[in-house]
Image (cartoon, rainbow, N blue to C red):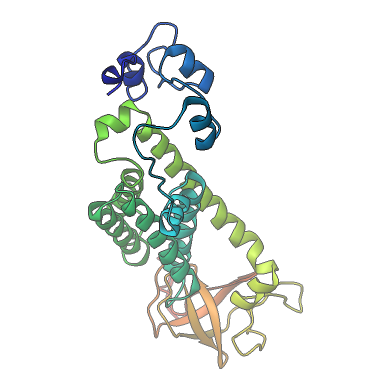
Length: 311
């Protein structure tokens, strides 16, 4: 196209291929970018004008009719969703919401927020033909593997590693075109990797900050357990607002503890966290530690240590 309009084809090609160099214009390894003045000097442009009216006034009417295409609200929305900053925030908030949902019993606001953010992220990328069903399915498989690792499989192993790889790969592929060769040559793949890494970092930092500061806020006090033992320690409150029992008291798990869940202790329903791994609904549990906004429990009946006689 450039040569057909008597322009330098090498410069035009170097704008999409970073491996090319053009003497006096760009070195190999960088894409060519030109200002208006530079484009005029290089012969890529014929004139500069701030508006269409200015162009017509200076150079006369065009030989062909001018068609002005206005951006629709839907196109504006997609442009907003796929911008670097917004897509990064959607990834971070989506993964953060799913993380908190996996760590909590039932389904609540965190899961709804996470799913909404990720639906918006993938919808935007899908509408600009960057993400397809393959990337969405790969992300879903990754989330399922991570859920199995956190909720079912003890420890951290193959399922967790594969889940992280699947989620990361799906997010990267959703940010670049299907042609990986082009993505590599233009630096798009590198940019996508950086954006995903920054989003993952934002997710980790967000989780740390929420765990640390949310219990101290007015909203946090409505969502999590809170706090003080008369003896100077901390204690939780049940959903009925009654102070929780003390360390050593026993109760029954009302939900699976994975590790968060609910238990009935001293006739009260409490939010608790297991400090001894996965506990099933109906297990007898004992309060082992109360710290800040956490009531930690463990199985009430444990096996005697080796060499000890059972009572």
